Length: 172
Image (cartoon, rainbow, N blue to C red; front, side, top):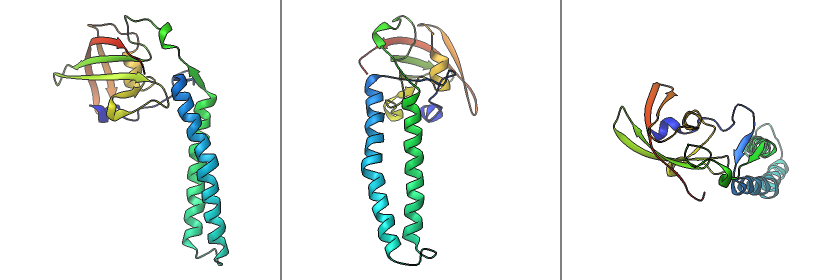
């Protein structure tokens, strides 16, 4: 089931990107690393490749230019998340329903399989550890639900039906 949840969006309807202060700081640190370590390294490799002469047949030069574009695109995407960040104070959220930061145990009704997910913001997602984006279709379908309620989640191959078994708030 987790493979069906993986990568299903990170921005809510409002364009704001919910995240914890720690998630914000992790993204900011990654931008800093990319701008101050990766980009200068790539620039040096481009300069070294340029010094080798004919650029038309210089595969290293073209590879590094492409790499530079990819890293810049990643920097831009991360900066966009930071610009649209909405820092969430988990302590202020309701504890009897699913909200940002909740760890939710659900029963996949069709497979009779229990799974546990924590709804997190950008910078905190880790799909292998069950930390999914609260703004993903799965996360949004769970929002506001209480223990015992059923949830229908649209996925590419149809729908998955869940029942909320428990809701818990732990330190992210």
